[in-house]
Length: 227
Ligand code: DX5
Ligand code: ZN
Image (cartoon, rainbow, N blue to C red; front, side):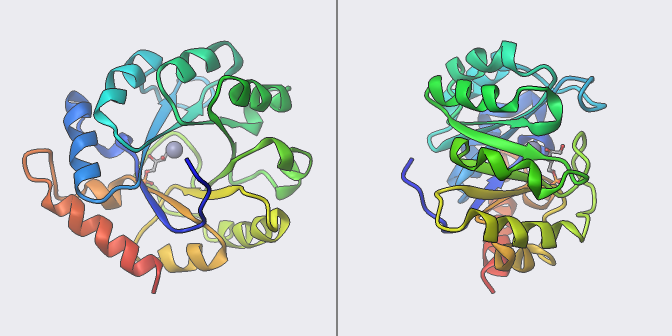
């Protein structure tokens, strides 16, 4: 996984057909997805439940590129090894999810995965200051985590700009998660984002049996983001 700041589109499986994860992963990759974003929710840290490492392991053979696992669970530490064993390339943990984020990030790297730090909309960039050498990615939550299909909170774009300046030349991805659309993609990339998670805006109109809309949605997002 060589580092690059070129744009990556990461469809979120949260907006896919849960009865067909394997087929959905194959379809979005064939239609141009760069990463596959996998949202793990525990009904405790966030008010919604999805699935755990067993499902991640089951879908892994259907992903040929990057499996990007976003843990919205607390505590996260007892499960990090299970998600690494499931084949996650990137594991993101929330700074708000426990008292020892530094330890969690070190554990993720020790398990051989890239370490991601997710921050909620109400969390400032100072949360990242003393973790810059310990992370490979910052997931900027641009909605309150828990549900797909929400509207991006506009002031988060300024946060992305400030994070980008803070990161400087370090090889740290800035990932945007929540409410990414054709209308805001360019502003997000201009502010410094290089990974755009997109659930609703990629999966709308398509299915594994009719995957062409996924390709059109991904292409439109890429064009809008780079315009
Ligand atoms: C929200 C998740 C996001 C979400 C994105 O808690 O982390 O990944 O699924 O979905 P959209 O693009 O529909 O906002
Ligand atoms: Zn996510």
